[in-house]
Image 1 (cartoon, protein in one colour):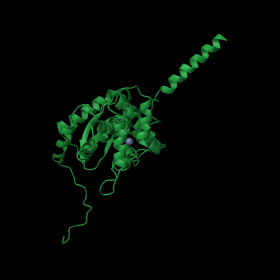
Image 2: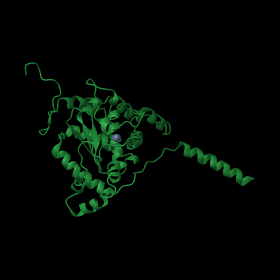
Image 3: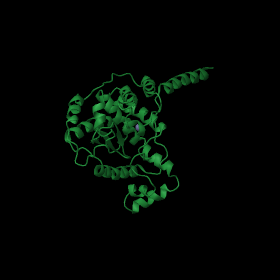
Image 4: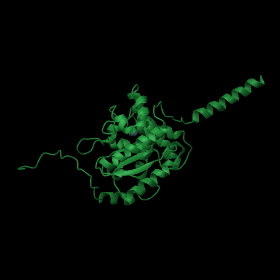
Length: 287
Ligand SMILES: [Zn+2]
């Protein structure tokens, strides 16, 4: 009977380990190589810099890069050439391009209650890059035409142009930037891992997203939520995940610079190519 008892003990120990383990997420199927993710992201980044009011201010870029590089040290962040820039925009949003570039609206910086919330948005966006959600979604949407288009792009003038001919761009509602609820749940999950790895309180990511869902003064919810739809009960999901993480003290603030940056952002002059949003109020009487 002795071997049987040993087997049972192994089973119990093995089962116990399995139960306490966090799942490791992997990218889904994809017609792009990781190198093509990076190339596409660089092409798209150049287009964003031409067409959107990207802030060229060392103090802000350095601050975002400080947080971003801290997050990038997590083993859940992979080895991507991340870049971190702010966009002058009064709506709360952020987006990540395939392969590494990330952009954060100034309103997102000022809306954060603490640094962990800003780091949470960044860890979430970083996870879309790591899990390659943009090119995964494009691969699913253009199943038949895509492989030939990517192959042709190697000979022609870029992947972004080739995708454009298939109707895929980086504008509003792009398949590269508007995520499924599954992708959202994954980015929350992996984002919480990244935060915990480097010491930020992971629950602050979920708290910030829930805050963005409460309606603003004009009855609108933050623009972020239309590109990143709520997969359902984000705070509870992250709370459950934290239970399986190693016990550790998390921080809401690491650099101590957020308040200074928030004040600085509010007095920043818009970049030259900034266009204020169209007025939606009624014209003043007599106008
Ligand atoms: Zn998302």
